[in-house]
Image (cartoon, rainbow, N blue to C red; front, side, top):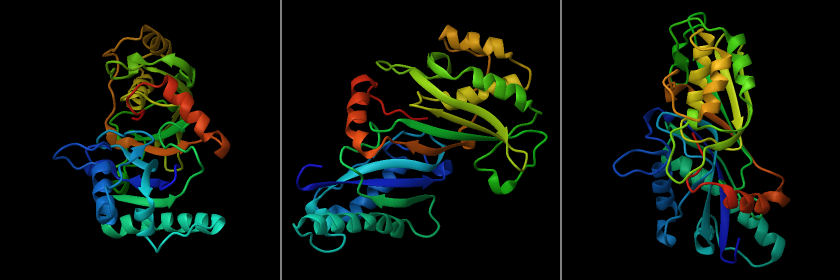
Amino acid sequence: MENGVTRIRLDIAYDGTNFHGWGRQPELRTVQGVLEEALATVFGRHGAPPALTVAGRTDAGVHALGQVAHLDVTDEQLASLGGARNNTGATKHHGDRSMAGAVARRLNGIAGLDTDVWVARSSVPAPGFNARFSATWRQYEYRVADAEAPRNPLHRVNTLWYPASLDVAAMNEAAVSLVGLHDWTSFCKSREGTTNVRTLQRFVWEKDESGVLVARVKADAFCHSMVRALVGATIAVGEAKLSPERLLELRNDRERTSDFKVVPAKGLTLMEVGYPDDGELAARAEQTRARRDPIPAGE
């Protein structure tokens, strides 16, 4: 970062049940709103409170175990976390990293022990890091307990209870066939001035050890509602309401359809965001800025 400003990376987990998504909205409780209010408490006496830039804005009800965001703090704000900075090279750098680690502790202390949002780590990333633009992929999971699976009440907030039996082999075959670089308009809520072209890098269905069906979906980015639409479409295949061939036709038609239902948000969790090696962070950010639409990619 430029002189006088330090960038801090936050690794964040949250239960999305009682949030109206990530992005700040007037009069509504959001993940960004809660965290930025806490940041104002931490830094408010030392200049303007920092704002968050996120890897991907999740919708209302969507959970996260591996969300990533960044904020920029001034020298004065950083020093307020644990003493004055000095100006002697490596010692100064080590001090920055040590004080940056205090951000997570301060935020979690404000949130308390019964919180639904938790900052797992705060750190100083390599130069050029941007939580949104440096990312190379995002990975989600969607959990479904069909009629054959156990209905565990302890997982009711992150698992869809589905009333029919599903053919996971057919669902997986259909999912794998969709992978690649495509226009996903058939599976997205389009926004004016944006593109729905994305590279779906991985899409598989598996049963976990308890018998719950788990979709693992990975892409360079996702357009709005894309994961939940993909899950809903392959569930329709698993219930024999939609053929795999028809699913490919729908994708290639690039038009919204009523042939399948978009599943609820509750079963969806952002698991991880991937970044390139440290030396490639800045170049990746510039590359993404040059081609990505103006709305942060998320689900």
